[in-house]
Image 1 (cartoon, rainbow, N blue to C red):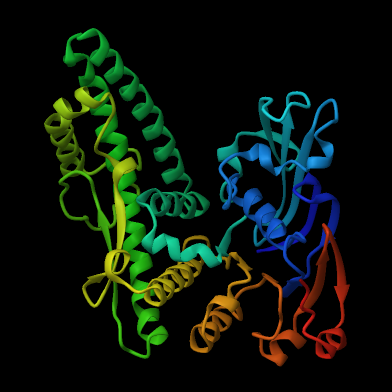
Image 2 (image 1 turned 45 degrees about the horizontal axis):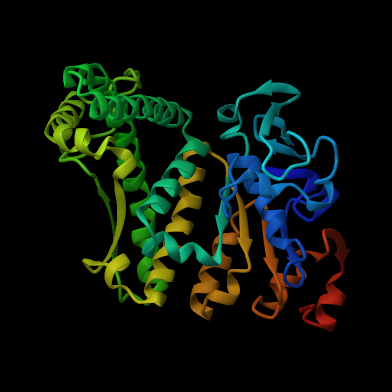
Length: 406
């Protein structure tokens, strides 16, 4: 697949952008705060309906439109896939000029109004960020979000299961708070326990299957990235005592029915945690509390790894994600690299660029092109990003200077 065209209106520092994208490596170079990361963020947002760098979508609107009667931002992507073209459109509309006004999101696919969930999987991307090291050493919520975003791009069944789990979790938590305040009969929780066990078991099972596939690739990359010094294993740390991962479900089985042993174990864990849940007014076990750990030579890299080791593990995971998506969809995802070469040594940078060669389309932001081999730059499309505008540059411009700006 590849991105053919991107249109941005009032998005971040792009007041208006109409940009065609070639099917090759694109090097988007510019100084700090010129719009390089915003460009990658826009593509990622169209693929996932979420920003990778901020939590509130209201900050995505260009500040210059803030005084308009109806401030809005629009993102439109034309994507070509093996089975046809897609037109993905997201519009963000703020209610009035006040910065805290209510924000409405509207989604369209091929001109038809859709839900956010319907856009997932239409455009597949893998994003490399300098802060990816936080996937290893940061809070568990970062790793859960990583798993959810990755899986929702390639597995609509998982996305549906996760959505239903979150709805049940919200209802159960609401009931727990009522029970804590009014001291009603806790037996009212039984129905929600059953529903949470069902959908929670399905979420956990698909996460563990995905981790097994990611590990198979990442484990092969880690020795290459460490000159054979480290071997990597991924471990899903469930908040409840659950049975081991079963084999892949047989073809034709009901995807909405979890393995009986898993859902029963989940239900027992909920019963054991009920006193704690009633006291806190929230559900204390489940996929929303689970974690993913990275073990190099048996050592937990999140707890005991050096910064360099954590960066290597994060790179192995991201490269494994590329292969995972390709295997799941039959097409290479679009790779988005946000100035990551400046964070990598030569060996790791070389491994990353080798992975880039297999992709149909790669979009790389950079403040300086010197970390990239001359032959790599010579075969790339060169863009200059300055104050929310993009101009194309020739290879001779790149050879004349490093195009580094401050």
